[in-house]
Image 1 (cartoon, rainbow, N blue to C red):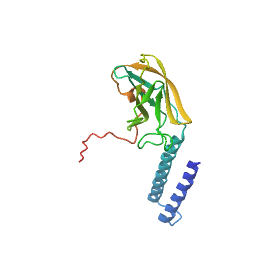
Image 2 (cartoon, one colour):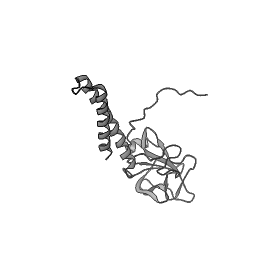
Image 3 (cartoon, rainbow, N blue to C red):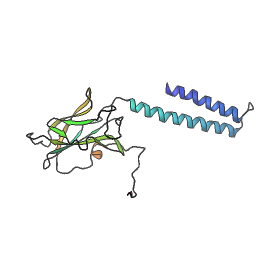
Image 4 (cartoon, one colour):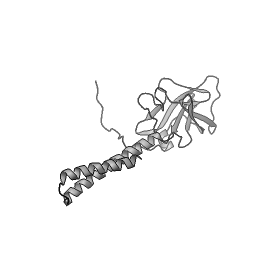
Length: 195
């Protein structure tokens, strides 16, 4: 429906431009080329807008099992998930619903409340959180299956089973999950100077 409306709007724009540029019945080649450029630009802008709108309306889902890395010395767990699209609200604390912070949950662990769910902006579909193992909880074991829940709202959760990887250091979680880079962000290689 959006594409049909866009085609009609593009045709109206192109027709108006043609009437303005070519009052005679037979437009010149230059005028036709200009009209074609305007029409093509309108269609490309429309296609970009409609694909972005469709992507943000797609139901949220986990693309693959979560990544869980347990650090035995610190008794904390790094949990990362890869989604099919970014969460709708990414200013401040990420969330799918306005006013509701999304969080990663694992049984027997709690979040740090200091940072909460985080995302790496150049890879906007991946989110991670560090959780502390509760007092009295047994150590996690390498290869152990573990349920991970992404809580989006009190009534909306995504849950999947991960396989625990026990190690002291964390490699690049976005690389391990195969998180795609954003087409809109670029790394800054310069220095940022401030007061």
